Length: 392
Image (cartoon, rainbow, N blue to C red):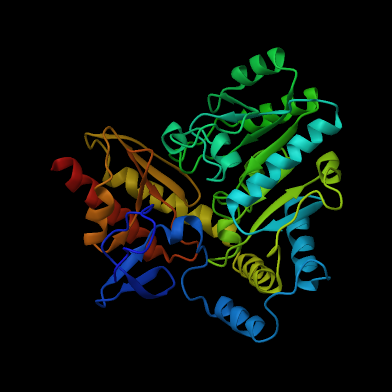
């Protein structure tokens, strides 16, 4: 099918999928593929899940949209379920991860302005990715995707990731800081997992300075790292938490959750969205939560992640060109010593969907519903493609 009428912002691989089931997709020629990306951490429950399909069909036959001028009971139910699960006080629903992070940025600025700080500043990190709106693009630590969109939004102070000393130095020299926005595990930046004391150290600095700790869990949330939320691997709770991707299993929804003082910042008219938490997306997200709970998929993701990680380490042991193999739950990475974008095409030719990020990192974000055999197939297939690439 011609793409000539579409803005050329994507470079799709030469394949078009017609349907899927679980961890598998079929293309227009009838060929089958094992999906180790699930739409970039979106379709965590797999493709064409019957309960998700039923929820969509049933709700579409009842009510799709009204407006937040009226009460939306499904939205209220979803807010309660999410807040209780995350230990937060309230939530604003939106349509994407970028919008959730945009909400967090606005919340932090309003928080600062209410404290009479005229130029509220948010600490962000190098190598981060928070979205492609102007504000989230400016917060993102990737110069390549910022180029050409200047002037960027001001009010961000960038520090190295996983560096508490750098945060402390900023704290001592910039009295306008009001918040820190950070990923518990970097996604687009290459699945970098910080040291165990990093988030706890950020929590401590924020408490000492009266800052908000804002965690971008767009990619890590909804059981992907082996916990419902990645911050649960530590002893801390953030002030602001952003979610999207796996929350809707393919239906677009984002969420910005807050607690404590952060939950009191927004008042009537401060923020809004036309499609915010409409009946359809709320019904689907409630179904996603039900299925994650019923399947205990947080624990399952941890087991599957260990299985794939061990398989990769065994099969790629002592392979020249492999720098590191790392992961947390079903966020996995094989870092090579060279750019490797062509691995996506090599894997596609092998019937396997993977992604390359940060130029040299093969990123795996498979669905949480994998069987043990499918997990082994991913490890074997990825190792085979990497060996072929490095050997060539």
